[in-house]
Image (cartoon, rainbow, N blue to C red):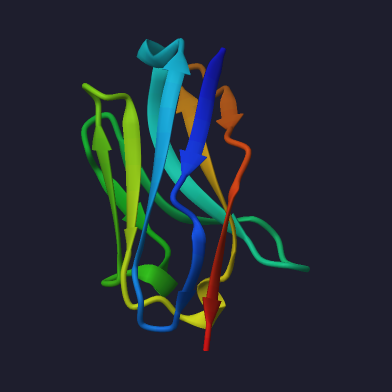
Length: 116
């Protein structure tokens, strides 16, 4: 089992910045990919960014150039630095961990609200 705890959400004005953190515990040695997903009201959950053990990153087109995902394996933590936030970035952000055996784990979610 892997446990994920997110922090860092909040309310910010458009153009502002937030940094999300996700701390992993449990069977952390089994984790391959960590990422952030978001879900806006009435919409499906979508991938925002992900990073592999080898630190290869992948971003949704809508956040490229504004968001940066990073991973600290020593601290078992993944971060999402969000700059130039837009109202359409509003949603619940979920941390995700995928193991080498393709098991999926989710955090409880943290709310990000961007006002115009």
